[in-house]
Amino acid sequence: MTHYPYSTARNVGRVLPFAHLQHFMRTASPSGLSIMRWDEPTMANQPPRQKPLTRRAVEQVAVVGFAFSMLTACSNAGASMAEILNDSADGRPVEATSIESWSGGETLSFVGTLSTPGTTRLGFEVPGTVLTLFGDIGERFSRSDMIATIDPAQFELAIQEARARLSAAEAELKDAALAFERREKLIGTGAISQAQFDATVARRDAAQANVQVARTALETRLDRFADTVLRAPFDGTVISRHVEAGQVVGAGAPVIEVSPVSDFLEAEVNIPEAVIGQFKLGVIYSVFVPALGQTFDGTVLEIGTEARSTLSFPLVLSIPDTDQLRAGMAVELQSQRNALGSNLQKVPNTAVRSDGRGTHYVFALDGQENRAKQVTVQPVKLLDQSYLIRSSLNVGDRIVAKGAAHVLDGETLHVVDTQATEFGS
Image (tube, rainbow, N blue to C red):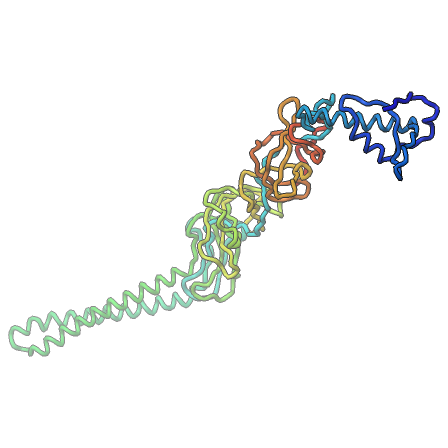
């Protein structure tokens, strides 16, 4: 091999062919490089012609040879690429973040109405014309207070008739009783026959029965007369009025709606059959009242066991009463549904990598040295800017958020910036 000086004049303007470079790579010594004369390939068995190297060619050969020497030396020493990179003073720059827990889900909203517990519609037990109606909407009353009356005239007349019948029946009974006493004395003397005496007894018994019927009729008329006055069954508040004075109402028709005094209101909402199973008695949920723009706590009191025509089940919640809440206000029951299961973690979508064979992983940062550790994860759902995963890592563990595409397992990294924990929903 013939050596040439680096600055020889005849190297100027020469370009190193790629074939020569390949030959050099095959014959170069791992321990160093020699700047040497290069012979071009010959043809027709002619002796090779020597051609000088240019300065640029010499520099190219030097760089390639150095790289080849380094790779060969590392290969001989069994070094990994991560170890080579770890020789860098700072390490590969990456951004990091901490793993978050995730227990959210889809927000469900169900519409309902506020009502007062024990709301009752009161009505007369007898038909008639409403004469008076006491109590305006929202007005409070006490037990046994008069709420409404109907015209009692016809009932008063019926009472008079019943009393007249009773008086007649009692007079008949008195006469029959006297006849019985007389004939009872004569039956022993033979002055009257047994048949005559039996007739007297029958008359007396019939008179007694007629008196009893007349008394019962009078009591019935008196009861019906009492029913012309509607009284409050408890302390409460007037919710609504269904009739006004002068209207004719039938027996049992609702006249007024009232509710007992209570410290809480009830919200009744319809829950679809697909999610009714997630509601439990005694559990507190958020109840939003649009009219007030406020949210209140509602405790589940009742859960319907039979679906309605809309394939939904009634759900009743109790809400502490305030001066702002009113029966009849619309409410929205808000609940979270998590169909993805538990033990989910949230990481940036840029942190999750794939090996192309169905295995996904992230790089955890181990210790203060920020050494990358490849950890297999199970992706569950891709959100807007993040992944929901399951992994063996813990909430709060630091992972590579950006720059993971070029990270190697075991490589020491340089964290140039730490992302905020909120990286998307």
